[in-house]
Amino acid sequence: MSNDCLAVLDFGSQYAHLIAKRLRRQGFYTEIHTPASPASKLAHARGLILSGGPASVYEEQTPDFNSKLLELELPILGLCYGHQLTALHFGGSIENTGSGEFGKAHLQQMHPSALWKGIDFPTQVWMSHQDSVTDLPRDFEIIAKTDGCPSAALQHRQKPIYTLQFHPEVKDTLCGSEILANFAEICGMPKNWSMQNFISLAKEQIRQEVESRKVLMFLSGGVDSSVAFALLNEALGTDRVLGLYMDNGFMRQGESEQIMQRYRDLGYTNVEAR
Image (cartoon, rainbow, N blue to C red; front, side):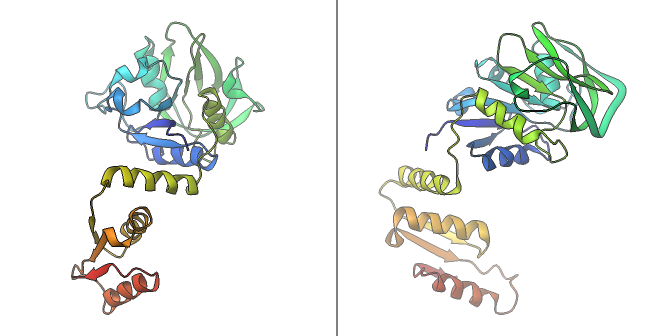
């Protein structure tokens, strides 16, 4: 599997992981990064998605953002806060118009767009905003509106830059999966991500990181550490991995014994209790 990805910049939205989940379910490999990430961390990205977030672009305390990421000549999709931040970066104006939208809204197409491939209008979308784009950036055009938001979706006239005031990642946006898939297609993303491919990639990354060394891993008995332990064993072999189960003193009576027995039932003889 290629390491090419769609990179989601997480601006504190509860939906950032949902964006990635929606794309992964459709077979597109997606990673989540902080907005302050250096460009070198996104060298393998084929497109950027700026998530929503609780901040206003005009607040003093806004998330740290490496605005140079918007100059990488990559396709860009800004969502909600990301829609406003992208518009502001390219010279637009954002204001609290006093007519925010919260909940379902009906989106009406204003201009053709590659994002709208296969979508019938009008269509229901999910809004959650107080601020709006009031003056368009240079070379941008409105491609959709709602009754309460005249600039609900924008696109650059020459570059693959798109911004949406609504949330395509939530189920209440009926065409959300199609919009995200259309953006992935614009980015030229291969549709080759699956859990099996992810496991293969994770094992290869483990081998490259560990090289010829051995690994000591502390286990809680929970899902996260157990899955990581299983991947280590598959990648390196049981002779190079030792798991130490740590009883933290807060387990229920007999639970530590059950956890150790579960590891033995799964065939792991390289686990010790402490």
